[in-house]
Image 1 (cartoon, helix red, strand yellow):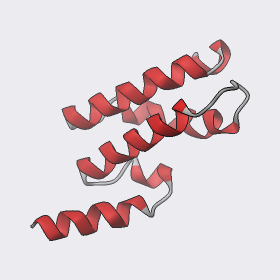
Image 2 (cartoon, helix red, strand yellow; image 1 turned 120 degrees about the vertical axis):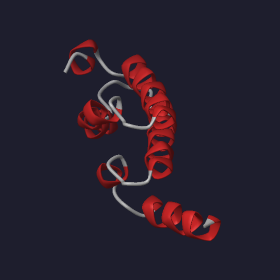
Image 3 (tube, helix red, strand yellow; image 1 turned 90 degrees about the horizontal axis):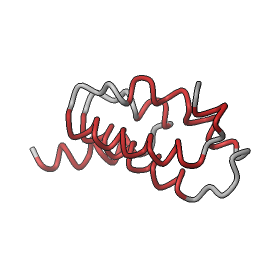
Length: 91
């Protein structure tokens, strides 16, 4: 079982972020939210296109069915809100 999980997570990491945040495995989604959080933390300007890329992903992410993954999504959302302009964060 552990080998399957490692393979699933490795395969999921190769997907686009849009696919990772809707993955059937909650650990893959959680890892995606962590990656979003790390990428957002690197942003210094609210005009960075990364913000526009990730903004639409939060609608489903914060309603994740797994509590642990949802917590990671909320952490990523907090970083997003700290980096995004007020207009973008309000969307």
